[in-house]
Amino acid sequence: MKQIIGLYPGSFDPITNVHLDIIFRASKIVDTLVVGVAVNENKKHLFDMKERTKLIEEQLLINKSKLTNAKVIAFDGLLMNFAEKLNANVIFRGLRAVSDFDYEFQMTGMNARLNSNIETVFLMASEKHQFISSRFVKEISLLDGDVKSFIPKEVFNKLNEKLNKNK
Ligand code: PNS
Image (cartoon, rainbow, N blue to C red; front, side, top):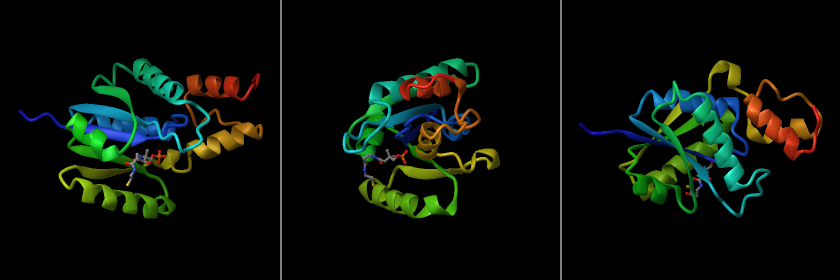
């Protein structure tokens, strides 16, 4: 029987509860789910590729009873090249607000032009995670706001360590 391989790509700088929610839900739809961490040297990340990957690995391990078919792989270069290498059938993206739509619409269109056999499927962020973004988590934390409810505990600790905080 054909195995369905899903790819959930992103920057994950760092992984948040909205990412984790999408991972849980996407993993139920496919046989194998690869969480693809984009290296993207041009983008300024707080966490380097190894740290971002490790934080996701840690979450997959903590939730391994529910996430038996998920793994994380870092990738450099074009998403569609990576998807082809994995033999992925479907790419997952999370959608939060309407503001995500333009960017996602364009990216999906471009990716479809590169390989129309690989579908992009959007999962709406759950209502309680609608507003979470890695960018704002970092900004709020940097400005001493409480981000505990937006990210897993282990990520919270790592973020504080990174920002030299003692909370
Ligand atoms: O979490 P993000 O930052 O929204 O994820 C964006 C990501 C990593 C999926 C996107 O930037 C990407 O696919 N990067 C790889 C390079 C690529 O394929 N660019 C062409 C996109 S049309």
